[in-house]
Length: 376
Image 1 (cartoon, rainbow, N blue to C red):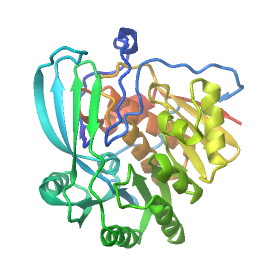
Image 2 (cartoon, rainbow, N blue to C red):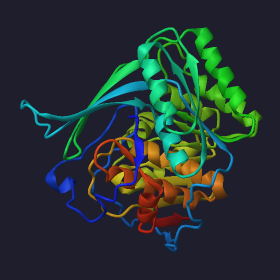
Image 3 (cartoon, rainbow, N blue to C red):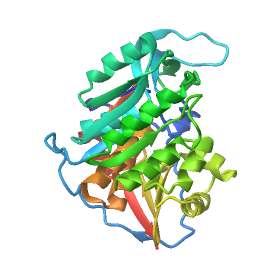
Image 4 (cartoon, rainbow, N blue to C red):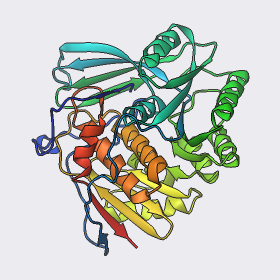
């Protein structure tokens, strides 16, 4: 979903558990909701060293810029979002509000990075009237953009969400891109990498884009000494991993499809990140919604466990996690602290009503309560 940061102070922690009401909202739209609920299930079946819960290492302030972080959203959407009173099977719901936003994981990531004071550049294809509306809205977000003209209409996605955070998403697959259009996107990425620190490859690819497209871009970035984060699904994820990105950041369902197995327990998650790392990436960040995230680096596995929260809308929480992780890595390169910032930002975003991403202050508040465990 296309989200924007908010400074609202509503919906902090310790509220009614959404899972206790029998709801476990998930999002599978153009943004990654990561399956937030309020239940944690980490056992203590392996030994771990508990990290000290320090204050944020550096204050977040608007003057921070740092090196450029480029995001690519190759299958963006103009998202139509309806907020209703209550979603129930075979019953009517009443529309309380509706709005139109630019959607895509890379767009959400650029919003977070910009909000946190980072320097973001969002690249995306744009076609038809939807594309014009998309560009007009994104231009107002405040970060740099590069729109690649295409001949077909940008897709439209529909999302319905209720007051309890239950969400239904219906997505179009995306317009067919011609080879010349794919080539123009690749050239735009190549040009943007001069002086960049990170390239974030975000979301699905539309028809016409080869499954090795992200893998090619990862190789291109490596030759320019630019770090890469891969956040996608399916065969594109599998081929991209083999190209050895700096970080791969699947959610639980994407990891299950990648590994062709169910991931249910803590041991499953720990084994999954270790196994994914053997497939090619330098590091792994597995986002687990209310359970936080598990990361794998050379010689260690790191868990970041958020506080118990009331989830109001999980849409975009996974995008916020990946973006804050990259933002923090660009600042000081500390994987453990970056994982903690990612979980804090994703969790804070999930506690907000409607389609919003957490502000730096909201993420900072959750950061103080995120528990970190390092397994040697």
